[in-house]
Length: 297
Image (cartoon, rainbow, N blue to C red; front, side, top):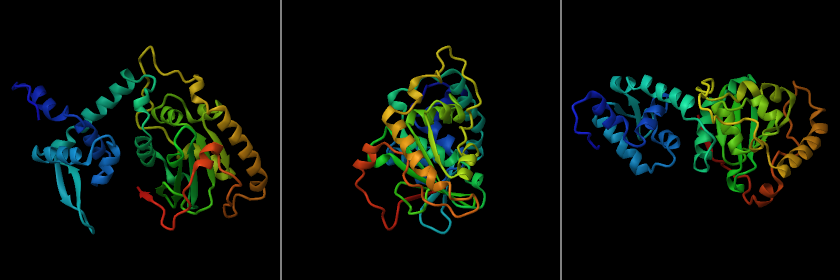
């Protein structure tokens, strides 16, 4: 670590805390991440080597402790008492950032992997009750291989799948990456994004009614921005491209007739067509694998 060459306690704490990636690693440890793979998802731009080095530094400083993983190989990482003392600092930084550093999203801030990691931690699978509900999210502005994601909610548990898990889909969401990020950080409400066309929703009635309880904003979304140039929620950028909206409307019309025959108490049936940009669906070359990749929360 670089030293300020001062005995001041602020300088000493900053030497540790202000090292690049350290604050984000402590943020994720404070929110419950423990495995190395979980910490990687919170800092996707940091290499595994760099992440391992930061964890070693934090362990050497007595901020993090490493424990043998229970029932499997490897290690888990946990905050010590000294590490937990950073929690109010991290929360204060988040509040300050939400209040004073929030602005329109820059291109380099549109990180799909980070958003998916955040959604996996913030959605509420218990919103659908005891029944299984499969939510398919299609990002119209992403490459075909990264545009479709499945969230399998079952008895309060969540599994996020990069490949089709093979279950009937109960709820389809068509959107863009900037729109979902704006909803997550509180720039725009979910209801407003749907009303403005930024999110297209189709699916079974009981699943649609539970959407607002499932897709929650981030933990600091309620903190209002104090910047004069705060993000404008009425921008047309919140809307899906015209082709995507037209495809979604055609999909919705095609599925409505089939779903009307399904009562809420009956097993979910696969909708006739998902919400997606036709070109993205056409470009998709993968088939349903026998063992789809799943990321368990």
